[in-house]
Length: 577
Image (cartoon, rainbow, N blue to C red):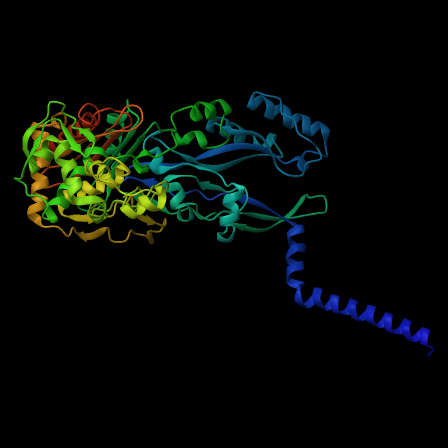
């Protein structure tokens, strides 16, 4: 061979070697991949959505379920051959639906010609199937919330998965077009509630026309959820709150079970089943933030924090229940005058009576004695400044300030003026209604509990998939005699002081009103537990810009307490008879 032929031979050999290597790669290394792609090109999957799990309240009442939605579909390939047949079928279908039906002949996919038809129409079409070749009635499950607005923030709603969500959930088997939980229980437990979609895989020809059925897989329904919520209690709480903007939490202080959680304004989750009408969305968007769960949002706490201040001062030996203070209606510190809510003053008043009458002067002084860091330590022992870890989205952490926090985030030193504000629950302190419910549950029982709303999740065959971890967080590290001082004072608040509006005949209630200063009108709080001697419920009632707790929030709590007492009386009468 001459040199030129040698070069040509080498080039040809290299080309063949590359081709052989590529062929080996396609056949041996990537053969399965391309076989799968070829099968997918020759097959079409018709999905069958899985019904989501049913959500029940603690007594078995259905709070969220599924409803079948019927749609009329046309298979164009079955009607494209005979124009006369096609016109006859379409005329019959149009008469049944009450409108003219048209579609493109070139389409090979099933075409939905009418969605969400009622059951009688679906039955009429099924009865006329022999005259409707190529027409089928399909059904799919959609979410249904039978009590409309009830517990909307707690239950949540569903909607089509968004690109951002898909990016995070794709590895867990989620696909484009899936319906997913967007808020509340529907979101937190979506991976258990959603079930597993089924469907049919059919072989198609080069025109996309179905040739034969390859496989069929039934959908697997999602798991069912049992809540701690008591539906009648929930409805009573929402009725009591209805005319206000705010939140209510009803908590079992012994177990941590949330019996009711209401936030107003609210919304109807049924609006989000299917495309949302623009006008309806605009009306929702123009409301006062109806999607915020105010039970988990942060606010200044005001006087309801005074139980923490008094407990801290007693534990630290900085006061005693009988120590006498003098309230002239104001408190002077350096060059500042801080007013008491009672302008004429309370006169000589003890520390314990200071909580009963909510005397700001007493708690200005206790706040000054304690200082920021000791107050913060006791606030955290009660669970403030951290999430409760409730199994719901949107929960805020709140804020328990310290001297270091102020230096770090505000670049300022801590002053005595900050401490006196801290003592009455004002200043930088922030808490959620749920956190404050947990604080008063701890006062009532002497132990901390973790609030939760889901008690069990089970598959349709009864297999338990989820049960909550222990909610008992242990006893409060305080002396019983100090907690008893706070408890006596809270009972007196309702029996003869600012909480009288919450009195219910035959039911001993312990509670505290609160007025939290904020731009505009103050926020109103009322926290209570009952029966006082053997607490079964804790109520946190919060009204945005409600001015004074004894004029709004206490009345919300009274309505709930009155309903609770009536229910108890009715149940006792049933047992006797």
